[in-house]
Figure 1 (tube, helix red, strand yellow):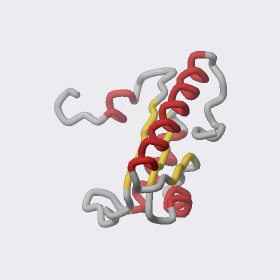
Figure 2 (cartoon, one colour):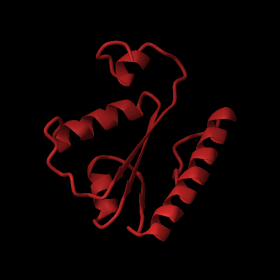
Figure 3 (cartoon, one colour):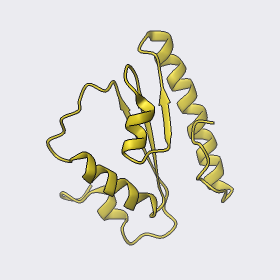
Length: 115
């Protein structure tokens, strides 16, 4: 990255851009000092209109509710165990491959990322 430019800044004038953002959390960090929930909500809403796709992956909390609260429709809850993490990454790799194939075929990206 050049200086302090963000990915958002660098891609602002680009055409036909697809950005995939995956948030993976155990839910323990809930006191961000940089952004409020309202600010995150607004940013995600804006970036989705510019071709960004967001996924939210979590364990040990209400993943569906938190994802919905920050406007992320693509969510996945995993079990915090060796097997759960292994299953999570198998699911994520399959979803990412399908997502990239849909981009290469010019297909709609609005369907459920994990299905």
